[in-house]
Image 1 (tube, rainbow, N blue to C red):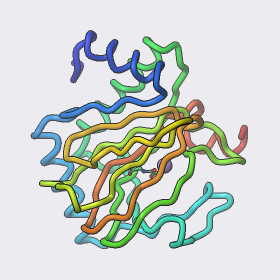
Image 2: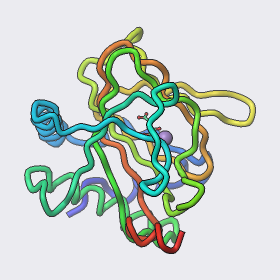
Image 3: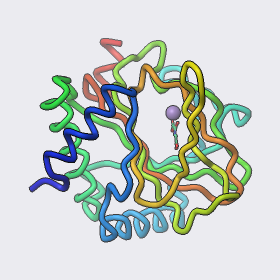
Image 4: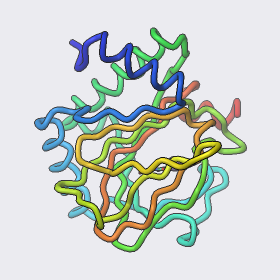
Length: 209
Ligand code: OGA
Ligand code: MN
């Protein structure tokens, strides 16, 4: 079962190839959105988030002048209550392989929480010593986001910058190696599911780098 019809995928993949990124509104159903929000709330209550670092696991440092978010990595084998999310990620992976001739073979996703006043300065998503992140994918989980709440995603291009509002159920995908971007300072708690489609499964990439 697919979540999205082929003609929509063809359009999104065209945009991704042409502009290196695509923004898709209402990418997840309201039902899936509520499942994710419930899961997020539970994990926040359980204190299951950790301050995010910069660099890969091999070379991880904490620097709140660069990024101030907290993350919780999700796991298909453990997190059965959000199994539909993993089905959706699988659809994205298989469809990009088919339509873009990629060989994506794995993924890694976390929930992200930016407390009020935090941001993530300009960066690209590939690590120097581990370059297997191919496509970045973010689904925003901000109920009732409005102008002034901040936390917009800024995408830097050669001649201009694009500002993308982090509204609930919106998905952004971009080429991890190509697109410099930042999370602007948020004035309220900011939530997302963020992840990467990988060329090699997570872990193997450390060795093959
Ligand atoms: C990241 C990132 C963007 C966003 O986690 O690497 O850039 O809009 N996130 O949350
Ligand atoms: Mn990023």
